[in-house]
Length: 376
Length: 131
Image (cartoon, rainbow over all chains, first blue to last red):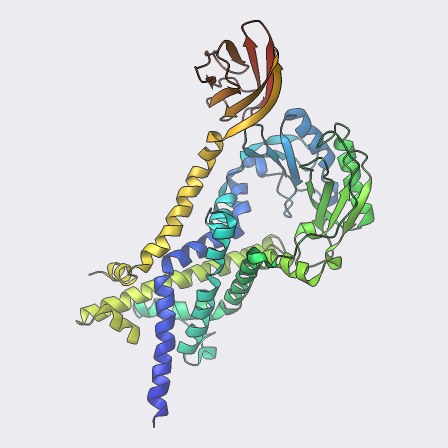
């Protein structure tokens, strides 16, 4: 007999916890969820807005890295080149990230087929807005990242308390939402349905967020395997490094790692740095930097390299966090579902507020305080 | 009272805790671009007569933008010239000259002191213009 009231009180506790966490953090949580959702497709949004970024697709191994390098040096000989990048989707131009002498960072774009210059865009773009506000709120990363990633805790509380307060939730996966019975019921049904289908996604996002928190608190994987040092030189990027030599490095990378898809060439920023060719290869759930080959900028000599499979478990976890968090592991094919689940997650946060507001309104209409709505 | 108002009131003090980082992130992003133009950049040292001078610039080499030049140590009896600028203003007492960049391509700063000695700093080309 005593078990029934005890169960009711337990259910009420979970429901109140779910509503409290969702309500009190709703503005901040919604902001992070919405910016994160758009961050998934932010490169594509920039691609739509900027014709310089669009290019006719070419085979990944036919990308004219050397020609793009020569064209850059011809057009803007005074900028400091940071990297040449080719996004995984083939309809993007080659991007050169450069620092100007007056302190700005710019993006220059080149045709992948022949390296022809297409134009320049600002470093601050849609992608940077969503990426930086979502990741660290534009604050210094040691402050911003912990603030954002700690939202994983209320996310997990929401999912656990939601499941405890939703009786026999396993029956709800295919329950049709009652859309014709008023706004509150419709929102409530859609909230529960979206919540159930998003469980795996919420757990994944929370887990990767906790990993980002661990990394920023000092648990990062550390340096990648060491390669030989390049020979001493006077200039950071020597005059001997031309397009032909850059292309020769890429071709050498293809020979050493057959099947490698070169995505990025990182140029030295110090007199002791190497040219590093990076790309996607056989290891799954890693960033492009997991497959790297280093070359001497002066002689073009191969200095060493490593592939994703050779990295430690710690490195592999670290490398997997981004592809899993942003769904970048299969290009647009994985980014679109990640974006849609991001929309569902954002909807959960917003619809929770709508449900609360309507419940509170109903309570007040009946002459009860708004907090009574949490006991329903 | 509407449902929205009830929701807003029910958040209590937490709404300000939540709004603070959101508003701050938006403001910081809005300020981030202009902040680059306000940051002074060391353009390196050059010999001018018997002395070594360092040139500092503030702003971008872009048509329509203002570029501020400053020499250290301060020298007032010299002239600044900027290729790509409309006119060559005299340096102020604290060694600063402000240029309106009108042309689009290469920005070359030349400083000529009264005895005729000169020094040049090449800042690079405008990125946004078609040079």
